[in-house]
Image (cartoon, rainbow, N blue to C red; front, side):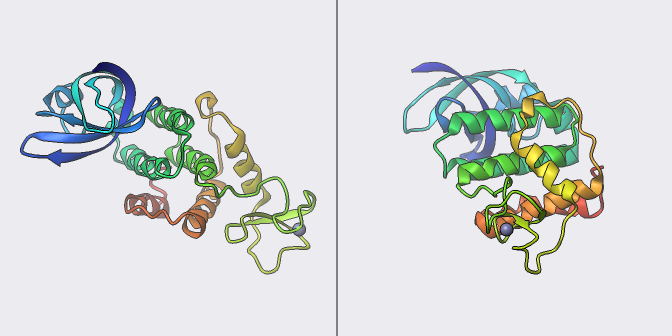
Length: 248
Ligand SMILES: [Zn+2]
């Protein structure tokens, strides 16, 4: 059946001599596999390289539970500010791999789709890719069933006298319940809460101290390592960028 489906390509892999299988993330069907024969139709519009992150309206012969076949695609946004920046493409690639993993563990495909598209668009609009990445990482934890507790002490439930946050203990700690966990700047907690509640599509300005930004990223990295079992090779490149502060 011929269908027009909005989506974004999360991954591509070779299929035979000249064809590719594309993992197309759609709001309606989650991730569907489509065969792109010759792959020329997409490539010519994007001047080469990978079809990953092609975002548009895909005209496909849809086959339920089988590989669909790509006919053509109308591109909504060529995402040139991502494609032309090694830093942005690294973050966007990491997010597409991460979302791919989260989708295996959650039924809320449409919510995850909106979060992902909005994050990609904001990175393309040149907002700080680390901040956008961290916001999405934090929001995705809900779909992995391992949200941190950010509104009260994770041990005693009190919401006053909060002194730090611990990945190991799932969230905030008050002065009484903290044992030897490292203290963080309270701005880290304030911004984490903000990341959690804000609507990515409405971001119009990001102005953050790089120390706070990095502390938030450290927390989320540790949190993912401790609670999710997700490890992605492409994260390492981002961590290296952070070490030299090159993305700032
Ligand atoms: Zn407590």
